[in-house]
Length: 142
Image (spheres, rainbow, N blue to C red):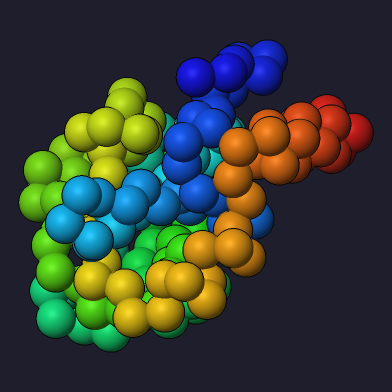
């Protein structure tokens, strides 16, 4: 997993420009979480709000919120589909998103309905690395 500055980016995951990631599981479902950049720049995550299992989510539309001492931000779905699982541990301990954003800090699992159409729209591999480099540069200028 490449490291860009203090941020990790996985070349195996698919990313949105809103800092959520997607990991395609062997059974065809997709786990979703926030990337390392978002988890570190947000500060300590105090609260996460997520929809219930069975709720429909849409590509690049909000599905929940995170709250830190600094701000409240929306969580964007990388794919269209139905939520089939929630990470209940994150609901009880939101800091898992800070501690392990690509592992124990995952948020939802989706049964996608347009995966072949939407996956190519996400950032993957070297494109994800280059995008994150640009995001870091933009942040430095602020």
